[in-house]
Image (cartoon, rainbow, N blue to C red; front, side):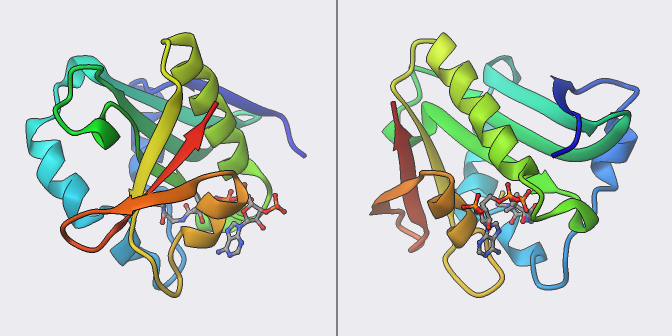
Length: 150
Ligand SMILES: CC(C)(COP(=O)(O)OP(=O)(O)OC[C@H]1O[C@@H](n2cnc3c(N)ncnc32)[C@H](O)[C@@H]1OP(=O)(O)O)[C@@H](O)C(=O)NCCC(=O)NCCS
């Protein structure tokens, strides 16, 4: 395992974050329909965005929302986006990012983190399951709602 660190998104890292690559077929899983709709009403004050560095290299990005007043329960403590650069996938970086997110949620007094994803070949379902998310429901669009409780 490399020298992984998590830092705030900044002017120094935002360009690298925006050019993180995907493996072929992953594009359609990045923003589930429910997130695309919710994002139009998300308050930036409740969002948490972090960059994963391996040494000095940007290798991943994770963002989440923490809003105890969100009307839908699964949007109160929620993983919005996780992306590990195509060349760096499969090295434990995604797991590291989720562990950091869980620590943040715990520190803010939440008892769970939710995620919404689309099931399907090439998607993140196996990853979310391996790092501890368990399905708890389904959205009106047929996406999976999964949760880590702690
Ligand atoms: C999903 C994603 C973040 C995973 O990151 P990663 O760094 O490759 O994951 P890790 O190496 O930390 O893997 C953690 C565990 O999940 C498993 N895993 C990861 N991807 C997997 C896959 N496609 N199929 C099966 N298992 C998988 C790993 O084997 C590992 O299991 P283990 O720890 O029990 O050995 C990465 O593939 C990605 O950026 N995908 C494109 C964007 C995306 O779809 N994001 C999710 C929606 S926002």
